[in-house]
Image 1: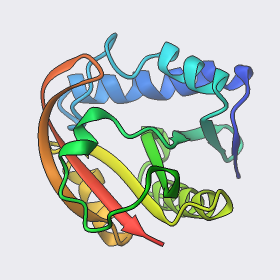
Image 2: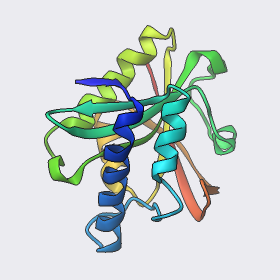
Image 3: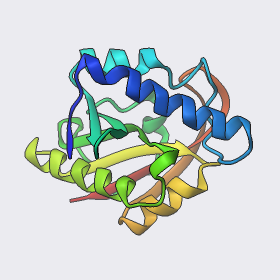
Image 4: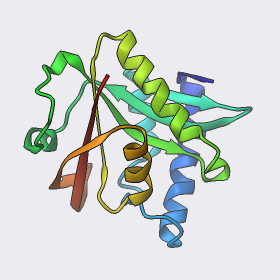
Length: 171
């Protein structure tokens, strides 16, 4: 089940962020995030306060993502295939799935929910980003019909030297 997050979900989401930071620090995954910089519990708290944080449950919180229509500065530098008006675009940020349940289809289910969410909000275009080093996410998004609109060098949420892959999909 995927639902809008409550304030009570923030510790569980922050714990998933921590698990992923630990995996990255141990060389078990490559996402390109930095503990204490991005994402943090404050990232989740602010998104929840704005009503933009969604969580995935299966007996416990197993995933989270942020949905909104905010396209960062880097998005202006992409070669988008679809020239969509801002109000027609839904953006997914910071999709995370707990490493304890990795490989069970939760990420795919979350992206499908994102598509349904966009349709329900009359958005016909999906956009998102990921670090170019995050080959696992890039592969998943390709399999789900997203195309890469470009790679933009930037400072991403306080992380220097990121090559941000911008992805899109028309519904």
